[in-house]
Image (cartoon, rainbow, N blue to C red; front, side, top):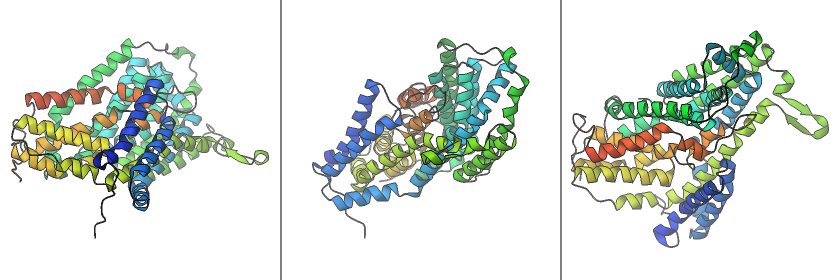
Length: 461
């Protein structure tokens, strides 16, 4: 028996109020100084308090919070954030970033080249693995640290890393968004991705050029003199075996947690075995102070901010979903006979769903049936509908500071001597997401990409 939806005082407005409170609070913090993800914790707690105050049944509200937080996907994300923090901290302490900087300086690479390399490297890795999150976790800390060491503007560099990861996610046929968008419209993934290339390739090239231009025009620190590098600076490059092994496992479709855990063990083994990392640096116990420290503990600490943010955000979303809020909003969408109006409705619906769920796949699956009905009645092909869904969900979460991609991107800049970047700045300099947003708008207005796209013409309901 399906449980009754969670009721909120003031109806739909009451159900939406906690999320609106959260968004308003994040906006206010951004104006005040845009703190890191830890600054969002009090806002999320306040939004949770508003949610409970407006919910009519405390027990049902609590069950909704717990069941959402206890989902396997949430546990996977939390463990991934913590393991990635430990892995990144270990590699940094062993000197991998310094080794890459030495190599780049020796080859004559500068700030602009480091931004371009980070963009393309993340795009290739994200395309091959099908995960922008995994790309940010594995490659983000190393590429960011090396780029800053070469004098790249921190915000431009992080934006390029996020942009490349987003571009690869759009292209990859094994991305969860590619699979979900095609499945929601009943078409094959391969055909959907082939049809998508006409949108994402121009957007990606535009974004790549924009990132290089920003890197060239933004003031940055002068690159170190390669002549000052010593031969011993190349020693940490042996640690490159660690990300290589992790990427290989991801390419073979091994679970992300398994790859990160093996990578952490390998990083410690190679670091200690090569003398780049002392055993006491890995774990140091101080009996007098009843505490412990070390690169692993410090690295895990770097992942705490985004982990707590994820827990609180999922807790806020749980009651919203239990109230059937998205279903009620989608049910109000009527059929559109005009192609352009129907496509705007598709973009608007999945945007609304993305804002309410903060999860791209959940958003597409939630609106999939009504998108079939609206688009099919207006003659919009299934491939076109699937791609409008996919392209749209690859914009907002990678631009706005309260979504996980921008939060995660900013988290890789924390710790050590790295120049920290806020989630808002990470999204602002994500040139690909901006180019994609422009592409979606032009495609709907002009009809670009719709002809010869194939797919089935459906006329549901």
